[in-house]
Amino acid sequence: MIVKAAAKINLMLDVVGKLPNGYHSLFMIMQSVSCYDTVRVDRTGENGIKIISSDERVPKDEKNIAYKAAEAFFDYAGISDRGIEIEIGKKIPMAAGLAGGSADGAGVLYILNRLYKTGFDEFTLCSIGEKVGADVPFSLTGGTSLCVDTGGVIAPLPAISDCFIVLCKPDMGVSTVNAYKQIDEAQRIRHADRTAMLYAMKNRDTALMYEKMNNVFEQVIEVPKRPYIKQTMKRCGAKAALMSGSGPTVFGIFTSEDEARLCFNKLKMQFSETYLTRPVKRGIEEV
Image (tube, rainbow, N blue to C red):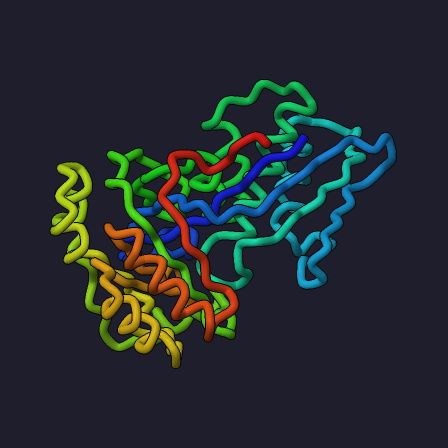
């Protein structure tokens, strides 16, 4: 069975504190976009979980969220017949703030639930997914959602107006662990206007949404090319431009396809991992 697993962007990301378990408490408004990995899972009749990919950068062992998701699924379901092969076709940039690894993990959970006929509902799959990656629950549900705490508490929001979204990843990666360490060490963080952003989302006030979009990681994560990319997007007509997740990917939202394509063409000449996408309503789609 094969599925497409969508990337995500953060229309808002605020770190609002720490939970009793030591994890950071987050306030995130997430949006699925049409940049997809493909995930194929087949039963092999042998023992063990095998991961293959034509992309040599993809971990083939338990470091991969897809591997962890399969193990967590089998543990929860009490399944001993764990002979599967997972093939990952990478298109979502890696270490980019776009939840590519979490999307792959979500795809594995979706497929295993059908291959093994376990009949778990979405809530159960999200609970399993939360154990292996903070963005896995949203990657399973997709669309437009408010995600809080560690990402496992999800409240759907009205879909954003149709638009064109340019993704541009500079040639660098960002360690999520290091990003949160820098948040902890920061003397002062200017928090996002969460109330106004929720009002904008619920009332489909796009002008207010563009104004209030915010990612607190921009205050602590140095991405040398970020100002240039954002400036290019704005000059091409982007209504808003922001870093996604802990970075380094920057996205710009356009209402004009011509302006979006102009921006895409300009940035693609300088940054190979540049994509023209649209918002989508599902995180996982069967192929």
